[in-house]
Length: 217
Image 1 (spheres, one colour):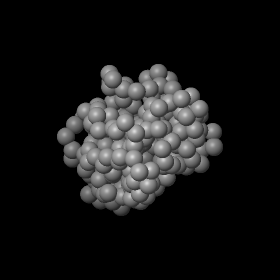
Image 2 (image 1 turned 180 degrees about the horizontal axis):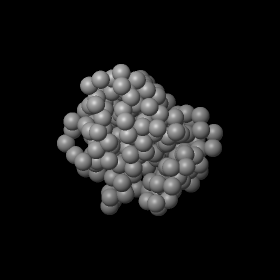
Image 3 (image 1 turned 135 degrees about the vertical axis):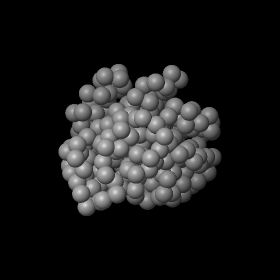
Image 4 (image 1 turned 90 degrees about the horizontal axis):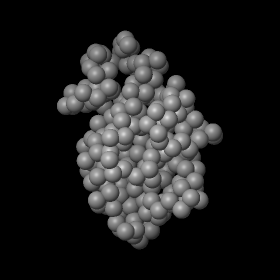
């Protein structure tokens, strides 16, 4: 099962506050989530998709794409949401989980296929963020093989936890999945990359050279 945790989009992307006001950051977060879910929606051989959220916009999108919704009523953190969703999967006999964030708008189905192709019979696949610090995709079989703890420096702890299981752990470098949008330099990369996603069209409207100005919608 694919798990996409989505926290409150009304308060999204605080690290972009030097460049974008909150309504604009929310618009960006919504556009990125739509890009991610559209990619999942076009993936013909995808596993079942569940959106782990209590955010109204994310719930509406999940229903539009006919994805399952796992309510995140506590709405504390991505880590808590995935821990709860993993228990949900285990209780229903789900064999494996692939966790991806909602802010990787350059994701494509070929990269998702590579994760499944690399997946061991038992073990894990990890895809680091472009800076090597975060984790932008985590596949596990069994579904709760080890706990996921997300944050700015999650990749090394995840790699250590995966290796501690003494089961195979495959690390993949996938440039589309690797680009998450957390700071102004990420926005520049998004705008300059090839493609015409909603997020890219939005980012190209803004002057990303002057970080002291809030962007206009």
